[in-house]
Image 1: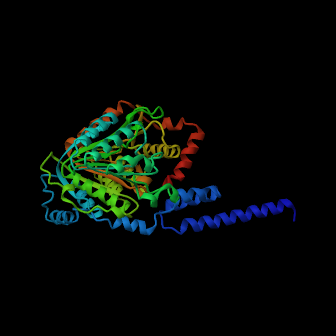
Image 2 (image 1 turned 60 degrees about the horizontal axis):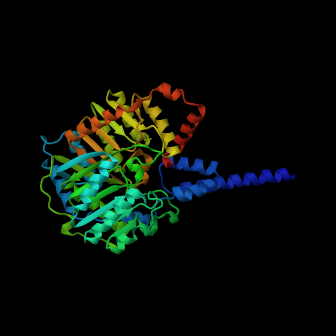
Image 3 (image 1 turned 90 degrees about the horizontal axis):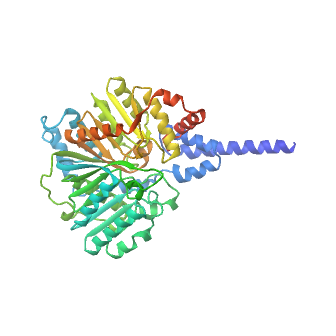
Length: 485
């Protein structure tokens, strides 16, 4: 047997061994079929490299970690959930003259799937500019008297990050209880040392899951993508803005940063507080926080908005935020307006959007004009074209980077939060959204969308057909990997 024959035999054996290892690796963990085939493609086409990627991105959460998250009790919420379910059955929670049938169904959906209480009489302000968001947030933090709870995917060690940290340090020095949860991967460059002075002054800061779920644990998925601030159990912030200079338009790469955030005052802070404590107790079980009245103060009527705070993540097989999106889209009769930086819908969401558009509902989706993640953006372009072919209108926002995550239906119901319109937000990341049952706020969000259209280009099939073959190939290839992006 010649030398070339030995080489060919060796290559064949390596290929077979890699294929067998790939099949065993992918199929030993329960996952969706699309994700299974996507990982199989990566492992087969990229020997060795594919397995390294799988170590960092593909491994699922250990069962014991999921169990720890699931068993966190919703502080002060459990009995209220039970009462609201009884009231809903008796039609006392939502009288017919207060809410539409669609809203009633949405409320029941989230009560059943997420134990998300309906909070009424809240005051809500929509913030779409980073400078305004931090101006309002800093003012509220300065006025804090009892506690400040902060949870961000990104908390950068940059100018605005240090300004925020120094403000938190000053409040801790004054005796206000400060707790911070940050995601170690989303906050690249920010280490435990960054928060040393805060902790010396009595504050606490922990990366999500602490050392058990860090970069060193070979897992880049299952990140804490939530953005929450709760002040004195009365004021809350929720939406798309993180903490970093780029969110104030200071990054030359992105330019102006267009996002959507909510400042809320009222009983909704109780639901946000509960979410924060579940995440805190899962992250720092040795410093678990139990129910205290000062964390859940009695709040009198602040406004007219009814809200549910809905969470989703890999701790539960039910994709609650996605179900809410689909319910809203399926019940739309006039229009659906969506802003998302990443448009990678699964089959169920793709069908819902297409069905609505084919049924005469005006479906409009706005995406960025520039990428922050190359593969994700190419997949977004692929699905934008696919939806365009199904009567959906696609707009490309040109005035900087669009990071807003909003959904508005018929001027009646809206959602604002951290969840993007993609697999990662629905299955892999820990997310939180506010679902708003308020015509005035929904109309405001519609107006904001229409103003953004003035800075956008309405895409056509001709725009996609004019793209180079290489760009089209990257879009098709990225689409194949979309379940794991």
